[in-house]
Amino acid sequence: MGIFREMTEGLPRQAPGSAGTTLRALGLVRTLPTRPRILDVGCGPGAQTIELARATGGWIVAVDIRQRFLDELTERAEAAGVLTQITTINTSMFDMDFAVESFDLIWSEGAIYIAGFASGLAGWKRFLKPGGWLAVSELTWLVPDPPAEAAEYWARGYPNMGSIERNCQIVLVDVLQETVAQFVVNLVKRPDDCLRELTMLQALGIRIHSFNPR
Image 1: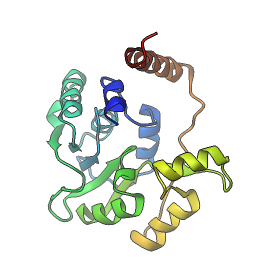
Image 2: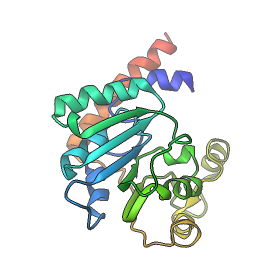
Image 3: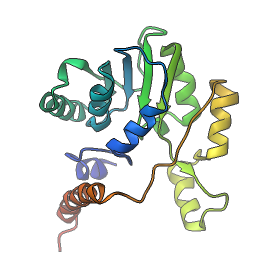
Image 4: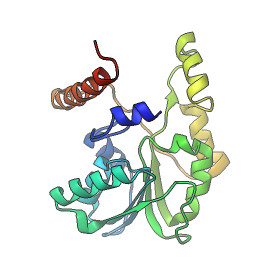
């Protein structure tokens, strides 16, 4: 895990997604106040945090356990002109102690798996104001019978990974008892996204090479 973290230092995102997917998900959120209070859990270096600040004009509390990521977010937010909207907090998602019903929107891209999908939803919903929204991205099986190699890998890496149907049941029945909107992050990228992805992969490749000299 330490090697993975070192390899991914400096990349704009630590999870699948793009500005487009962030804004698409935000578009499913209705009836936010003019300047919403937003909690971004496991924000990483904050690519989505900045997009949320730009799109909503709201006040964002960005939480991550790694100070390095929060420092990167601060630098990028200042360059983007949204730093005054963002407060960073270095803490674990397991130790958050915000006031009950204090946020209009809770956001988490690529991080809820750390707590577990059901446990994360159940633990975070108390921070939502009445009528608030909770938006997350989650590792999810898209087919009922995945290839054996993939199933074996994720049985070790994330044994509780569920299907879309199971995750919707968790939201609708087990935890939130609320309506759910969902979409699959598209793996077919636009040309400009591919260019950004290539740049990220090149950066990652340099770091991989440093650990595996030839």
